[in-house]
Image 1 (spheres, rainbow, N blue to C red):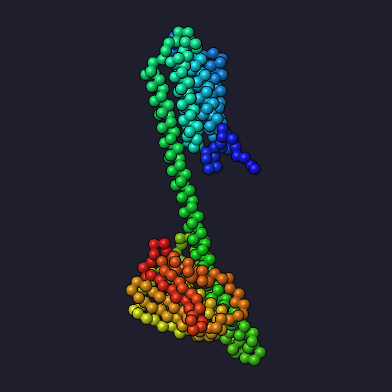
Image 2 (image 1 turned 90 degrees about the vertical axis):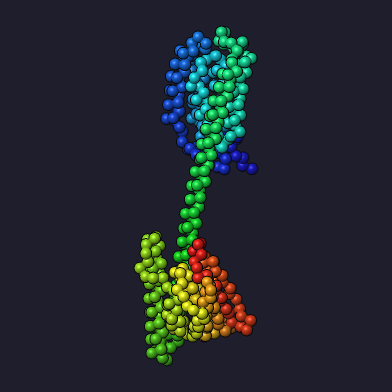
Length: 399
C-alpha cells in the first residue's frame, strides 16, 4: 500500500499545493534582513530590560527565518518550527521585536494552506510558552534583572496572536472563494464547449445521414438501371448531384460557425419552410411523403423551427433506411403554445444492413429536450413505426 506524505510535509488538503514548486527566496531574504536589523534596534531600545543580541540570538533568528523557505512545502512543520524558535528566543531573555513576524508568517502560511488546527496549536504553544516564562520561570532565566511579566502585556500578545490568526483565516476564506469561482468558470467553459461539440455533431449527423441515405438509394437505382434504362439512371445521378451539393453547403455552414464562433451564419438555418424540399429529396429516394397541417400555423422561434425540421428530416431518413414501406405521413399540429410533429410509416421493418450510427433517435431527443419538449418513438400497434415530437412554441431558457 502506497502511503501519502507525513502530516508535517503536507500541502493544502485536496492535493492543491499552490507554490509547492517554488522556493520563496526573495521574500525570505527580505524578511531575514528586516528581522535581523529590526531586532538590533529593538535590543538597543530595550537594553536595560533585555539581553543584547549575541551569536545564539542571531542563530535563532536566522533559523526561524530560513524555515520560511519551506512554508509552501511543509506548512505545518514551519508553523511549529518558527513558534519554537521564537519561544526559545524570548525565553532566553532577548529583546522583543520582529521575531513575532516570523511566527506570524509561519502560522499564516499553515492556515492559508488549510492546516488550521496545526496553526492554532502552534500559536497556542507559543503564547503558552511565553506565558510560562513571563509569569513563573522568569526567576530562573536571563536576564537576572527580569521581573514577573504584567498580565496586560500577556493580553497584548494574546490579542496579537488572535489578530494574526483572524487575518490568516480571512485570507484562507477569500482564497477558497477565488478557487471555487475559478473552478466554476472552468466547468462552465468546459460545459459550453461540450454542448457546442454536441450541437455540431447533431447537425453533421442529421445533414449527412439524410443526404447520404438519398445518395445511397439513388446510387443503387442508377447501378441497377445503367444498362437497361440509361435515362432513369441519369435521373438518379442528377438526384445524387443535387443531394451531395446541398449536403456540402450545409456542412460548410456548420464548419464556418465552428471556425468563427459567434459569427453570423452566411445562410439562414433550415426550418419548416423548407419542408417541401425535404419531401422532394425523400421522393428522390423512392419515398412518398404526405404532409398535413392542423391548426393555425404560426411563426416559430429559430431554435424550434430548426429542431422541427431536423426531427422530420431524421424521421424520414430512418424510414428510408429501416422500413420497407415506400410511403410516410408527416402531420403538423399547431396547438396552444405547442407544436406536435407526427411521422408515420406502415412498415414492415427492413432487415437489410442500414449502416446507421444509432445516434438518430438520441439526437432527436436531445434537440427536443433542449427546447423543453419531448420525443416518443416506437412501433405502432397496427404495424410500422411512429415518431411523435412535442415542442413548445416558446423557447426554453436552456436552448
